[in-house]
Image (cartoon, rainbow, N blue to C red):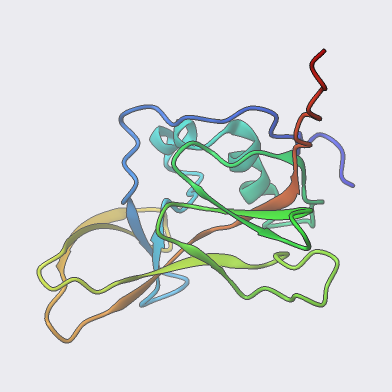
Length: 170
């Protein structure tokens, strides 16, 4: 495992109030793809919206492979998806589900994403678009009757914290 990365989530992270759950981003490198709460290094305001462990793991995994979190406790308001008889967990934002899992692998969510459909007619999505130079443009996007957008978010995977063993009372 590469050194210098804290891959233990031992408490429930709660994002500050200014971090909204629906922060949509588009990137020049992936035209037509929308991300929820994408980690953009140029966006210093967003660094506090994820735990430091989650934020730095996303940045680090762009250039190297990291081990899964151990232990892993999902952030407040996120959903946990347990696999392998509850021995392996994937954390996704609320109303998102893991996609791209390889259930035959020892680490099913390595390289996986969380996805959700945005399809409510009239729904306004405030999208920040990043160009190749890091410049941004704000794009208000309203979903029409025939539109549906697949939105991606980072998936975080690992091994759940052990549940305390109940003790017998006398």
